[in-house]
Length: 253
Ligand SMILES: NC(=O)c1ccc[n+]([C@@H]2O[C@H](COP(=O)([O-])OP(=O)(O)OC[C@H]3O[C@@H](n4cnc5c(N)ncnc54)[C@H](O)[C@@H]3O)[C@@H](O)[C@H]2O)c1
Image 1 (tube, helix red, strand yellow):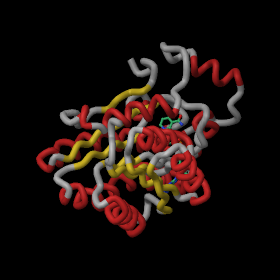
Image 2 (cartoon, protein in one colour; image 1 turned 180 degrees about the horizontal axis):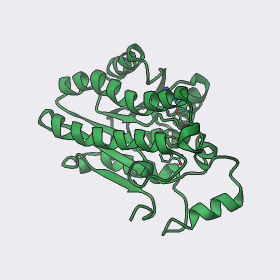
Image 3 (cartoon, helix red, strand yellow; image 1 turned 45 degrees about the vertical axis):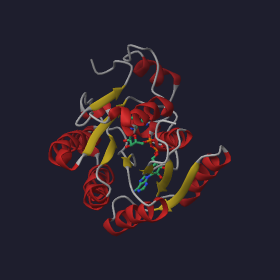
């Protein structure tokens, strides 16, 4: 039980990578507050965790809204008596296409869900971490933030902002015993965003072309990312802050 009784929020945990992180952390003893903007999806994840003997509950919140993120943090403290870890996983991308064809509304949504969410999580969770003698943020960025490719320019930039912001916060919040780290997954075809990243239906041809760029020869899974999150959330990572773990089969080298 590597995170036994830790109080952990996972945002966007109603599906995809967040679901995998929530389940893995719960299996290792954490009390998980499953967040999503979609209550039906989030509740299903909670039910699955409870069926497996884990501890979890759901809290609906939009990570782009300050009052909702505040209420999310308060719910974790109220339900678990403290907050130890916040995994900022909720994310969104515009469809893969030329930069000039992405609308202003899509740009705004991308930066709200991917970047403003980090600002709001910081503003609202840091006081709870300070009250608890420290804490840990795990921000799900992307290989897109370090090895950008054409077609996802505004998404790539938003993930670059997540990475730089996380490093800056690690430097600033270290004296409060607050760790801030990122995980950069490579493409995962089994998620809600996969067709948007690919720019259309995931044909075998599209997948094969992308897979050929990953030295270990496969895509990432939610479990791959969850295992990295488990390490960063655990006390084994007590001296690890300001890093990005690439979960990418060496794609970024
Ligand atoms: N799938 C990939 O290939 C991949 C690769 C690298 C990084 N990522 C990142 O991983 C994270 C998870 O993405 P995923 O691929 O699992 O996507 P997904 O679409 O499968 O899951 C995202 C979840 O977030 C929720 N969500 C969306 N907006 C929200 C909001 N405003 N407030 C609360 N919840 C919200 C959705 O309802 C959904 O359940 C994202 O930050 C994404 O950028 C994904």
